[in-house]
Length: 257
Length: 257
Image (tube, rainbow over all chains, first blue to last red; front, side, top):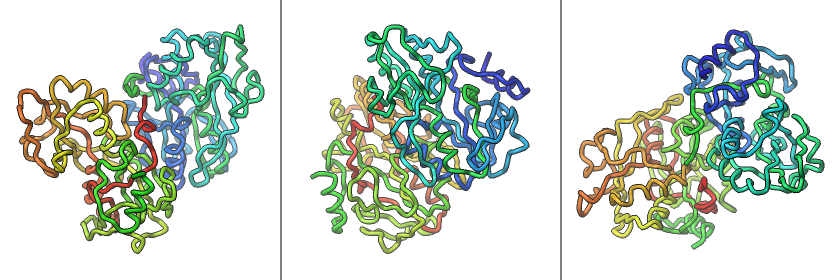
């Protein structure tokens, strides 16, 4: 299916995970907040480009992305999460009834692009085939504050065969706007992870033969969701995990080299 | 001289061009505007990353850069230009008397980083030795609008030996935050430049033997200055051309790969 067809499917109310769909096209995390918070949140993203790589910041009130033909950010995400005063309030498949002319939509890079790249480079990601979720951990690393936005860095974990570590770093280097290179190679405790088999979100990943694998950690798009909660904005809206906004951009258009 | 010593020299009132100084350290264009315009200008930069690559957006009222120890953006640029209602008003070597708590300072990448890289790769830039200025042209290309910020793209021109064109593209690819790759290779008319020997700013560059050279055009940090004029902001302040803010960042820290 083409990106525009996936967006139409979501617009028709279908609720589905977008992982592995429209392969080769950029999918994004979505954050929608009132304009009064938008400058501070933009600064937060600029200061924390690894967890919050900006693909697009839309004009206040605009719901058509420049990177997705005939799109409508109020309807084209399969499932949204609505937060009120920083607390999760409800799920929705269409946010038209909540939309305000002062809403600013942020599209932030997601890891699907670089995961495709890892697979293309012969790196196994068993959670794909087993329909499990990548393990995610809240680290001890503080993000750079901007206004009321602050919090700990969240990371995804992938166990990489020792002989593939260099390749994994090279492959993800090409995509700084999709979380880029790992923030930690091998040393879980260094970033405050005492038990690497017990993630805060997602499913545990226990490598088949631990001495052949090293855990690599990448900055994760869940970081801004936790940060949003701490900022206690009157209303904010995000996509639901794994149910992303699918753009017309190709992965290669986002590659730096 | 180290970056901090150059900043102190400027702080003491010395008025000098920073080209070629503290080599290997990142120098930046500076734009200072009231907070009420800062979100729109940030969006303008994000939508036009080649002419306006963001290195830092400082908090409103903050004059200490995160990337320059003990710095003061009100004093550490050798010369400033003050604009009132979009029109140039005066030069200053210290803007403390104009400073307001709602001022937001933007540090934008400049071409000095990639020029060093070109020279290291054996590409001749004769305007360096002759103390002339790089030729700059206003193109026919529209920038992406944000709020009241819009205008034409300004480019710098460098004549590159045919056998060095690939190297010039490779070398500048590594620095997307310092204008990155050229936006045009060879075809001046394609971007609205009818006479490539008659620049709008800077000095003409006539290659010694035209058939051995091709003109390459890179997005230029003068673009935001023209855009600022068109936005007619009550007060805005920039650095003077060639008299940049010198950060502690190294060129290699900005390289993407």
